[in-house]
Image (tube, rainbow, N blue to C red; front, side, top):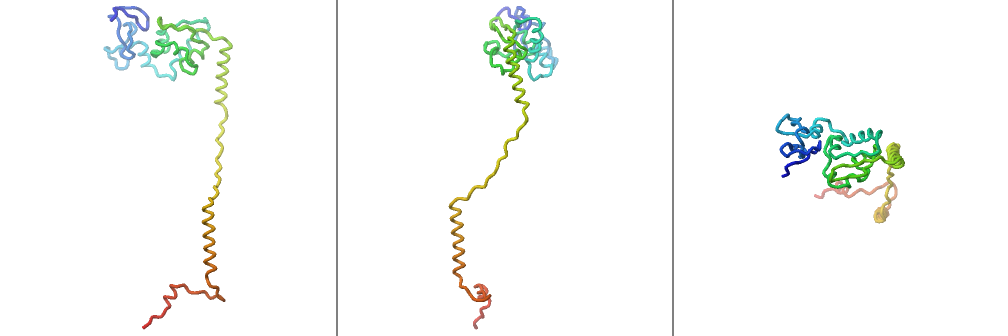
Length: 222
């Protein structure tokens, strides 16, 4: 266990006895950067200022919006901004993920990611990333690149604003009967015609009585 360590928020190097571990994020902070549990008021549980702010403030849709507004503000004064990871934690009110401390690809990933959009929308790009000293250097994007980003936004907005076109209605067509069904129907018709022709033709309106009527009218033999 080291005798001294650095506070993850203010950056001061203090003896280990003056540092405490946050009960929420698990990182080491000095006593000046920690407060008791704001949810329960328990003095034995200490939260860092970032975790306390996150617990009290309502959750926003994107936590990196604060970084976008900060870079918009700095754009009026300078073209290069150097921020430590601890400063970014304080700006967004939350801790960066572990991948931000371990790999440089997290800072230069696809523009569709939320954290990359934070500085691209403000007109900045991550120029330099130093994982050992835990800082990142942002630089203003050139005018041409910024115009291309704005054009992409406008095109996406136009695509979303297109009128809704309903899908084409499905027309149901009757299927033709199969050849076997047609053959069966013709066979039935022929059988009916044969039965009609097989009956004897009688003159006049006389019609032969059916068998059950003949049985009813048949006299009984004594």
